[in-house]
Amino acid sequence: QSVLTQPPSVSAAPGQKVTISCSGSTSNIGNNYVSWYQHLPGRAPKLLIYENNKRPSGIPDRFSGSKSGTSATLGITGLQTGDEADYYCGTWDSSLSAVVFGGGTRLTVL
Amino acid sequence: QVQLVESGGGVVQPGRSLRLSCEASGITFSNYGMHWVRQGPGKGLEWVAVISYDGSDKYYGDSVKGRFTISRDNSKNTLYLQMNSLRPEDTAVYYCAKDVQFAIDHWGQGTLVTVSS
Image (cartoon, rainbow over all chains, first blue to last red):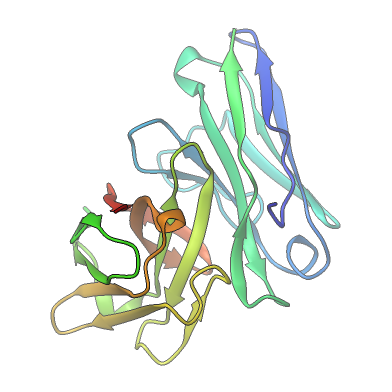
């Protein structure tokens, strides 16, 4: 059981937009920055979003992040088949003194 | 560019020990905190441990606390994970990763650890 809650799966058609939610508590999302990761099978995970809404260089602006209270959201617009992957949110949990990840969301581009 | 190369994985019997290494290049290693993150078969990412840039602070996930030890040698640009009292549920791909304010901006390709008799 993950500390952060994500939907197990989402799907949308190519070119459409999808959002992935990440729900936590005041000890984690509520008081710390959230990051988002893309994980393709057999590959190293990739940082998409850090500090709630910042994109590392090389990450297209089709990917966006937001946070409100104890929840965060990853948005992906202009979906491409290459976006099919598992997506994880992560943050620091001040009560646990640990990094915590969501359980992951499998994105299917139909 | 940043490169993180893990080594030391393999097959080990339950109750035995294993040490993973991660050699970093392309960064000033001694400036950054470093993590170990794992992914078991069919499971999601699970954070294992983090160590501060100078090794003075270390934190662990509950499932490995008391059994695993994270350490680093900044003179060798190398991160370590000493894993003792291994269990079948420790079977996973173990990733070495670079910290940026408790986000992780670079990951290695991973090394597979299989705990089985």
